[in-house]
Length: 227
Image (cartoon, rainbow, N blue to C red; front, side, top):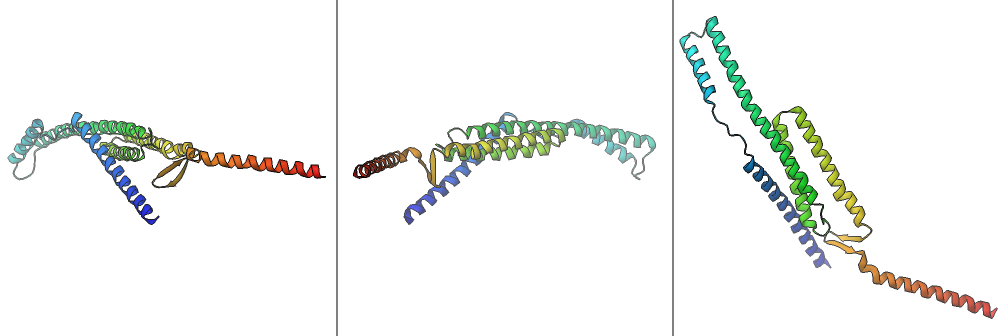
């Protein structure tokens, strides 16, 4: 008995490790796949920005004492405004990429978590691994939307992720358990026992009840005859 219990615990531990590893593989597959077909914008030094910095440097070099004339100061301010505008454009491109990537990741995460509900009782280890992978991908996607800096889009994506997570959690752990409970009896972490396996026992109990009722009826008829 102890050996069987130890074996069940080892099997359960291996199943947990496999499910966790499968979840990480799902995360890696989706993350690398999205970045492959929709790569992150590479940081490249803008030639225009470099030229603007050079112009600023030339203006400062003409005024070695550090005091700029009103005309030079206006020129420096104008160049700096142009630099800030170009850098803001590059930042907007990166934020748009972060937002789009987050949305794509969360869509894939939702799809994987939905697939994990299919035949979840028959393929419990695979189902748990896909569920973990979907959750990991969901967290990864939420991280990118936070990095995007867009408050409205960030709030909308986080609300969507929360609703999806709660809905799938209900389907996985509440509704699924209610549907399985009448048909199966949980005996431990190793699996479940189908209610159909109790059919012979139920039949015997019903047969005994019929015999008991027949015996009681016969005994009652015998007493009436004696009386």
